[in-house]
Image 1 (tube, rainbow, N blue to C red):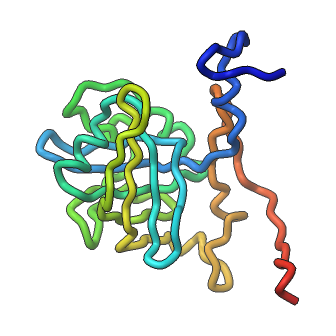
Image 2 (cartoon, rainbow, N blue to C red; image 1 turned 90 degrees about the horizontal axis):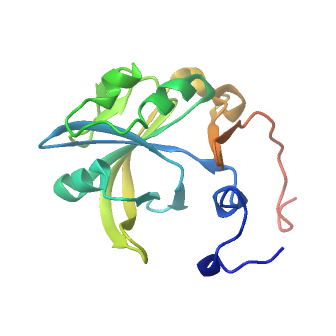
Length: 194
């Protein structure tokens, strides 16, 4: 099958939603003049090591983008398998000013370096200063880039000096309504390593 996205795909569901998978979930928390906000984004990833930087993309005019533009900061809470239902609850289309932390039933904690809430139960949280908000082609498509200036790691997910994904069991989006849990992993040396 070949199709041009501008012409449509003719399938009951858009295959582009599932082609690039799995995608980590950035559970973005913000604070602004209308209150605290928590929303999951599956167009999320790390983009640089030094300084550490992340990005997430938002489709539609969402409270997260507005809050980040207002304050210049946000937190990325990583989602483990044990937070699946809470993450999903926070994706509900709630009215502005309703606290998704309360709706999702997660504990709100303060960040250390920025004025922003974070999810205490998250295995890792990245405190970020926004570096750019880019508007993409299409209606209300944005990419938000941020520099990570603080990192929270829950001690129970550290083993032998490593953040152990086998303990974390990160949740990832596969497209449509499908998710996966990262459980299996293996090491592979690069060609220049022995």
